[in-house]
Image (cartoon, rainbow, N blue to C red; front, side):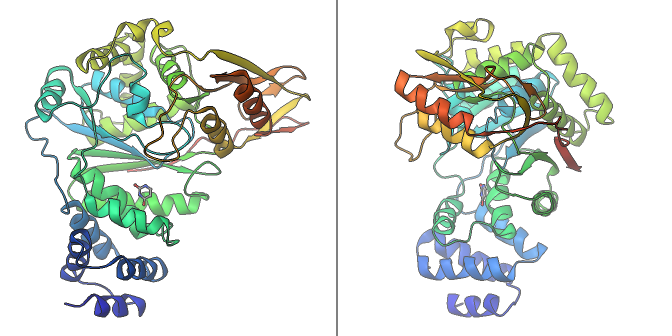
Length: 434
Ligand code: URA
């Protein structure tokens, strides 16, 4: 088989066979197919597309390019979630303990990630002593024992995706639905869960800017998941403003704890109830959305979800007292309010730019080597639709020094657009795809 023949076939709109796709993915992972040929193939796929069978074959071949996690030593139904990424997204910190408290098993691999804030692992490291560098045995033991464990992503999970994604990033080939589907689903399938729920964001702060694109992606992801034999659902959510109020690391952990304590409602809680509801339904643990929602709300009301977070923190070496006393979490030296210069109603908050404020403060990573400051970030006080008076604060900057805080305040003010007339919030959950 020759890669040049496969390139010509896809260039002319042909359909690649299972064997051809496997030849290309395994060859590229091993290094027998060079970057320039794989770049050309990514562009041909972006322009010509792939049908359902090709996308599934590409996903499965990528999944097999490295080690896969066999979760069979864990008793019960294992659930996992993936988010296409958003600003202020601390969903896993709430959803995972809540769903584990409701009886499903959460055996999750998470990453650190690049971007405005750290990934779930960085956020969890706000608990002094917490570690995700745990052995397979400890991971399986914890999930069997307390229903939940979170482990750092191993280097050998889907090496094909690491190479292909790096290439796509520099060749203008990221926004291709079959390439995104195979990238996301190969990693999720390799992680071994029975139930996979996907949070597909759309809007300003998201990868998919329109609801139509988000729906196409969500349908592609769930179809491949189901064809691969897993239970799969997706939720399309609005990312036209940050999720919840906090953007950073320890500030997001504090917000997650507030939600688990039943002290905060709104879009963040709604998202966790919807994703968790899909998980319980797909797992057959709830007959319908209402029953699932009631079960999850009960884990907040009776304190079992908060206790589950404390058990997770304790099992992985962290100080679980910080779950009940957030004063033990990292706290920034400087706090600065950001007063509005005019009165009005919040029309829009540029999510992406709020993320950049957190980045400016040192809360995110531009390169893998960057060290992030867990204590810094932004806590918004106003969301879309809220009324703000002149002199009232848009939010609080949490910074390591006064200069950075002052610059961040200017940047945050510029993220807000006000209207003279009342603003209605668009629906946050746009669609649920079972
Ligand atoms: N996230 C991924 O993991 N892969 C993509 O291709 C896009 C988003």
